[in-house]
Amino acid sequence: MKYEHIIFDLDNTLLDYDLAETKALSELFDFYHIQGDFQSLQYRYKTINNGFWQKFEEGRITLEELKTHRYKEFLIQIGKKDIDPDDCASQYTRFLSLNAFPLPGSYEILDYLREKGYNLILASNGLPDVQYPRLKASQMHDYFSFIGISQEIGYQKPHANFFHTLFEKNDIADKERVMIIGDSINSDIKGGINYGITTCWYNPNDKLSDTKADYDIRSLLELKNIL
Image (cartoon, rainbow, N blue to C red; front, top):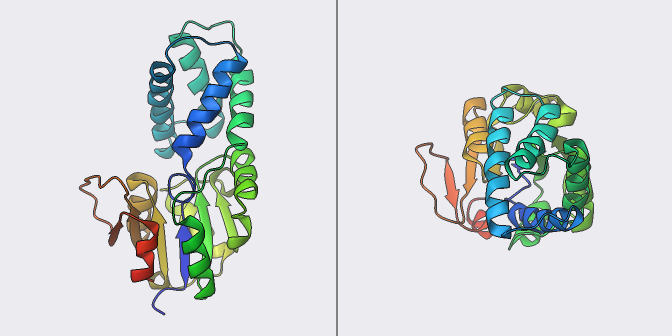
């Protein structure tokens, strides 16, 4: 067995984050009686949110700034300055934590890899108060020997110290025995390449990228042909 340790991203790799986000936003808008075209509001929020997450992954803002500033900006843009951004952040976190939708093939591939004897590790830039409830609700928690969440580790993907901590916590000495699987070119694939481990891009929509992973898969079940 060439590889021993398999690092999985969570959102849009094992769990459908886009669907969870859509449901959470719908519940949030209902909670605050925010009216308007849902798709337009969602597009505006996602554009703002993606921008702040990129700043966070690049180390330009802190996690605390990410948590509230995205909602402050969103509320300003839709003219809802009367809503407290901190409360909005709290309510959205609550709604999001209740939504967990496994992606096709996720349980089958996790069962397959566990039965084959691989050490499964989770690596997420998500928030602990969102990810742990979703892992529990989806019953994925127990598949992993270690769950690495950026807020608890102190660094986020693609930072080298994030991966260094994963290696320390799991007593991993040989990088050649490790593969990371994720949907994000920046945090998962570039992070893995820069750290010197094998990368597998979960790319169900057949996107193009100048960054080349070692493996490029459309379905999680394709991992059976690799591992």
